[in-house]
Length: 290
Image 1 (cartoon, rainbow, N blue to C red):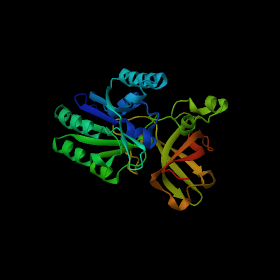
Image 2 (image 1 turned 135 degrees about the horizontal axis):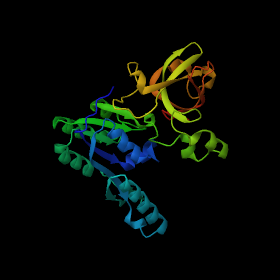
Image 3 (image 1 turned 90 degrees about the vertical axis):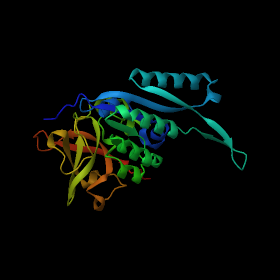
C-alpha cells in the first residue's frame, strides 16, 4: 500500500537537446509528467529547454515541425523555453552551432526551488552536479532521469537516478524508433499495452544461472519507483524467463546478472502455463554496442 502525498510539489526541468542526442528521441512528455508525479504530487513547474535556429526558421518544414513539437509539449502543461542557436566559425573556417541552455535551466531550477519539494532533472550532463547540490541544500529531493552518456558524478550526486529506458511507455520501443517494424509486428506487439502478452518492454537481468536467467521489468509507473534492485517490492514489477540462446550477440552470460545492461524484448506466455512470462526477440538497448 503506497502513501499518496498530494501536497508534494514537483518541478520538472528537461534539457531537451541533451536527452534527444543521447537516446531519448521520441520521449513522451505526458509519461514523463506522470512519472514525476507518480505519488500524487502536484506538478508545480514543468519546463522544457529547446534549441531554436532562427536562421532555419525561414524554412517552412523546419518552422512547422518546431511549432508542432512546441505545441505538443505545451498541451501537456510544459512551458517551452527556446534557446537560440548561435553560429560560430572554427579555425578551419567551418560553421559550428551552439545552443546551450544549461545556465537558463540551472537558474530557473534554483530560483523556483523555494516552492518545490522535489525536482526532476531530465539530463545526463555532468555540468549539473553543482546544481543538484544547490537544490539539495535548499531542501529539495533531486531525481535524475536520462538514457545514454550519463555522467557518473551526476548519478552519484542525485537522490535517485532512473534510466528512462525502464519507465513504462516513456520511450517507443527500438523497432518503432528505427521505423523497421512490419505490419505484422505492429499488429502483434508494438501497439499493445506495456506488460501485456505480445508487447515489448525493457528491463534488466537480476538472476542468471547455468544456461538461463530472469529479467525484471516494471509493469507500470508506481508511487515508490526506483531502479530495479533485489529488494524491489514484488507488486511493482514482473519477471520474464530467458534461455541463453535468446541473448543478443553483444552480451555474454559472464556479464550477467547486471543492473547496468538493459534489454528490450517481447513478452510471451511462459511454458509452464502458470501466468508467467518468457522473453522473446531480445535486443540490447543499453549500453550501446556495435
